[in-house]
Length: 457
Image (cartoon, rainbow, N blue to C red; front, side, top):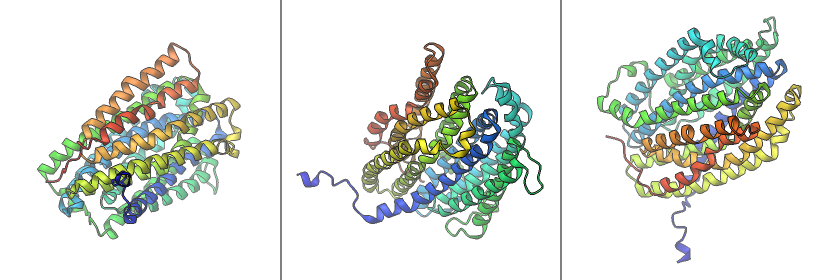
């Protein structure tokens, strides 16, 4: 009897090889992408807490765009991966084109918002005048990159649904090295360029995103042999596919948008705790994402693999994969959290951070300690719910996120700050506690398997 206890565990090396071949490039792409943000923090840190805080509050607006575009990409992958699994390339093209048109509208819309109401928007996130002024200087150049960012990431999602993930790491490498070079030139005024400070960091980001967009577009048009997306495909129409995209994709997109606004609301709470707390949250946010790269890579690889199995109606294999992946997620989370806990002091002892106030460093250590414990929860619940979403239960994930963000963690943080006058690390803990609280919901939902649905027509 005992020998059959783990029959659900996948033992085929090809399965783990496939997960690794998808997860590792995605993790590499993530580490490079987050490295760009970390490089900005390191290179701007000598300008002081106000400059770091200005970049931080602007990045909350950028994060809303990021979450919206990631929602578009996730909705695309949920549907397109299943169609790709059954070999229907035309339907994949229709879905990709529909997503791309929405992304273009979003990038243009946010550009106009920050052009005509930038000060008012940043004023919602912080009441510190110097921080807002630095944020406006950063926004002046960054807003021009919004459209480039939207197009690049939807095209990368289009390639990802077919398993083409290496282009992501190539573009991330281009952006990383270009951003460091341009930061050096324009922040500090090297090679004859003016010293632009935080505006130089934004200008560097704009140039880097222009380069990565060019690389992705060239790859899609010249090198991709799986989907062969072309400009004329933007004219493709698919009434039923568009309906399915809205039906299954809208909850994903809406959920990610609300998650982005939830992040902005959390930033608004942090933004009223002082410049040192804002700077610490910015630094820790980038470092935390850096240590979580393998968690995100494994989550994307698992949901893509399970989604392709569901697209071929192989539900039994999809169930075995799902059970096995939960063990993989816990292992990846445990290792990532342990490494983060062990290296948190080393990371914050980098020479660039030594220019910061001792209070900022103290808050950073406290916040990173909190994130270490939250990361294990993130690894399990986020990854498991991503599989649930890939299987078609997009409404459930939307409602679950809504409840935890808007009715649990934000009220908890507000009460901790305004009623109990708790120290910043307690407020930060309240804002991140959903990562652990969602684990019980995820465990029940994912193991009932009622979420499995073939979405292809």
